[in-house]
Image 1: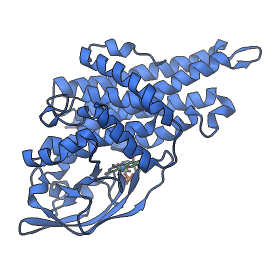
Image 2 (image 1 turned 90 degrees about the vertical axis):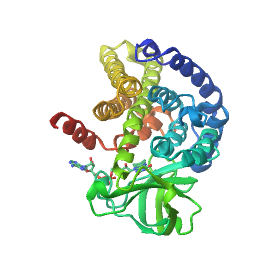
Image 3 (image 1 turned 180 degrees about the vertical axis):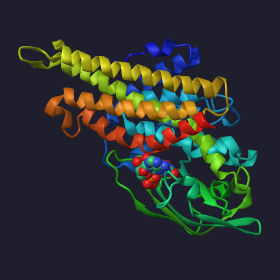
Image 4 (image 1 turned 180 degrees about the horizontal axis):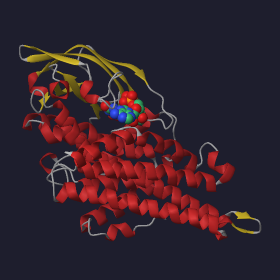
Length: 385
Ligand SMILES: Cc1cc2nc3c(=O)[nH]c(=O)nc-3n(C[C@H](O)[C@H](O)[C@H](O)COP(=O)(O)OP(=O)(O)OC[C@H]3O[C@@H](n4cnc5c(N)ncnc54)[C@H](O)[C@@H]3O)c2cc1C
């Protein structure tokens, strides 16, 4: 059983503690039976979205005016949900996270009409959103993307290709970042694009080491009304970065969930496994590794809940704090999980064991929503400005 003492930290309030207990019990009962299931991730992810919606946990993905639990997105609640779900399965965490990340641009920058059209369906799990920024030639350098939107009367005509898009193929709508002028990052604009818009297609599904719905999509002369713009013309980069300011800390939280599970598994295994006539946990080498793992987990949790609390209670933008939390927690979780695999010996690399699954799950976290290098650039830019 993972350490829960962090729930008493002053960053959290009683309703967060209550949420952690409720979701933990629900996950154990409803999600755990699917823990090893990697067969049809698209179908399973949609199922998780529906289950989370029916159980009421998607109320943390939208603001209160549209049925959500809090006036604005509460980062601490999002972190607790992701941490808790990730301890059991990465796919359930993914399904939950994408409801918030995919629709976050609408929650933050949408008109009241757009919010009313999309957010209630996100809340129930009836609609699945996606966040479409990355392109084949623009990942870390997202301000350099080349998909275009050209004004045409009351509409814009969108063209271009996006890749590595989570929920591609199963999403009902995409918050789509496109170029409306040549002014670099200042030339981007965000639109909501419905998946049934003529000219929109899934080019291919992408199969990654820890499978989840992911793919490449293409827009060919997709007509989108001006009323579906999020923010103003030229504000697309700001829309994307404001969304990431909220969700980056939550990527850290999901990594923390993976790391906590790895430590739990390692403690159980080293107590039960006997080598050289005694439990593995009796050796000081082993104990040192477990101590390192626990310390990395607490350090990650402190950075994550500091960033989340700052965003909820102190400041609208937490660029530095969120980047530190994401960078530290994802890198630390990779090391913690690697130690767990090592402590399991050969069993650690046996396909299907929890630590083997965690070893695959953690890897992409150090890449998406900004690689570790990009987080360093973000932090240094804040320091030097
Ligand atoms: C599983 C998964 C899910 C994803 N989901 C989404 C999604 O839903 N929506 C979306 O828009 N995108 C998504 N992405 C894309 C993701 O955000 C990008 O992969 C990421 O931003 C890195 O971009 P890239 O792959 O083009 O790598 P590159 O930008 O080509 O980077 C390659 C390497 O160069 C390094 N690098 C880049 N710039 C610098 C620099 N200035 N100095 C030093 N090193 C540098 C990077 O750190 C990296 O190590 C997802 C990716 C994955 C793997």
